[in-house]
Image (cartoon, rainbow, N blue to C red; front, side):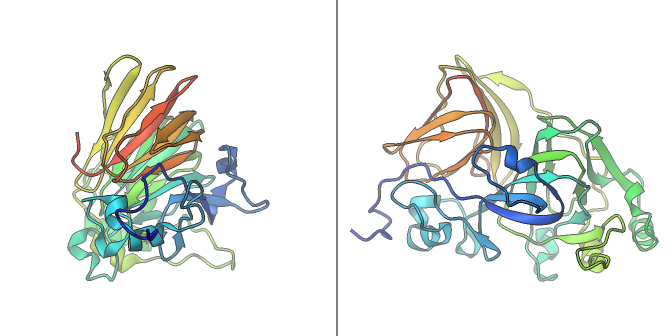
Length: 336
């Protein structure tokens, strides 16, 4: 039977080789995750865990499909992998990352759907889960109340725009949802998990007057930024989610319910078993502790920083841990 046939292979949890991205603002903390061997002397800001982008495609690291790419699966077995989840452009719907901010990232915005095509970009809604935060770590999200577009444009051009941003001090476990059009920046000292639309369009508003590797100021994208920013998006709050018991040893926080994706934080006590919704595309990311994930006759160990994709064709999976684990479960938008 042809490997590309939707009906051929048995589905199982997929893991991928991380793709490391050098960034001016990056550091070395991603190397603290088991299995992530960073190149020496390079500032790594991002580890792309699941990606189907022209700038980088994930390679499968386990099972019968080891060595094949996520792009190949999307071309040959789209329904096997994603089921009924929309896949714009025929690509995997999400881009999954960990980010290490040694310095503040640029103040930036992603274009909303209303103007993305006009600006030759792609909309990008995303979520940050703070895995670790240094003392004083901050997130810049949205504008301070009362800021007008005219003031924002003027302050951008005179180099004082940073003071117009709303700022949150954060600790591990904090969550920020970032719809397209919300101007934002990840502050220094943050190590975060990020789930986003499969897009990489970013318009840079302000970069703290830094220079790039060539000694020149990095490019700004002012006009598309001005067109993309939601000026009524003032002082957004961190996600507020109560912890609820879901059975013996299982606790859940519902972090995001959006048409693009849903995200839950699960705490699994030793001996408890989490069984994700069967026959539904999902991503599992371990943010603390370690887990054993099994399904389709395959079992894998997921340490902190480990990420796996559950194909829609998988009939059932189980997550267990000897010592306890915290993980994020990403599923199609709107699921409860």
